[in-house]
Image (tube, rainbow, N blue to C red; front, side):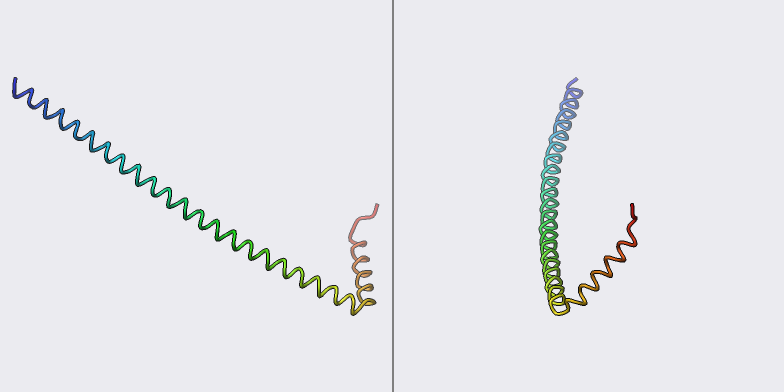
Length: 102
């Protein structure tokens, strides 16, 4: 019977050892997953920062282009008032033809 109890004790020890190993492996896996998630989150934040900067730069360029266009438009109207009025009348006439009348 001693042999059977020794084998049972060894089997129990092996089971406990395997359980400890699994627990340690799961703990390491959890730490690795946490580090990976942190890395992904940081990468995402970097992409968002870069995208925000590009959007801000594009907004500034669009704003500058709009300001420049407006200034050129005002200069043209100031230098060519008669032509500007005739163009505005022509555009108005075309738009009135395109829109439905009641």
